[in-house]
Amino acid sequence: MSKKTGRLHFLGTGTSQGIPVVGCKCDTCSSYDPKDKRFRSSVHVVYNGIHLQIDAGPDFRTQLLRYDIAHIDAVLFTHEHQDHIAGLDDVRPIIFKTGLAMPIYAQERVINRIRKVYDYAFEEQPYPGAPRIVAHQINKKPFSIQGVEVLPIPIVHGQLPILGYRIGGMAYLTDTNLIPDESIALLKDLDVLILDALHHREHFSHFTLEQALLQAKKIGAKQTYFIHMSHHMGTHETVEKQLPKEMNLAYDGLEIKFS
Image (cartoon, rainbow, N blue to C red):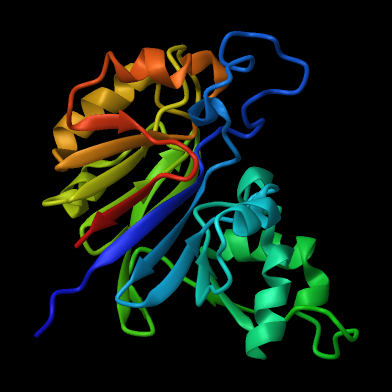
């Protein structure tokens, strides 16, 4: 039996404002390093030939064009904040190309929000040209998308219960300041951990880099990549020099492999 393989493309690694922040002249926002230009966070995962998108924020159309992504089998949502759902309509050309409704997977609360924002995509008699979206409610139980098993990882964002996802040897945990012990137990033997690390200042709903480093050591993945960074983190080059060799800042456009 052939070994399943996966690859992941970081479409965005920034926080809700992105980097550069409009009107900001700090060192990070003024940097000419492409690794300091960050769209809102999302990733595209291909596992055993199935294309799964995790989150679709306001930069989504530009991300799809920039990284030449023309197919998506399903979209998974971590939570309902606008920097994670505001680009869902941009799957419209893919829907028209395949002739199939786009499946999305999320908690009930998140689906209710998406239905409100994109009501036209769920109507029984949609207007011509409207995208068709089919919502699948999920909870803590594993589920399958075209033979790919996805394990939801319950985490907390401030006081909001949200989901990370594990697919094979990769786990994606964005927008969190708390990983419960029962979720830590689901993160054993990872090839790759992708983890929220906002900046160095204490925050009510995100890990600081220092907190994220401690969590990453606790989980013990072979390699950890930090995401959802604000301009207060500092430049990629400066921060990267301070990290252990098995931990890195992710950057837009980075592609990695996992099993």
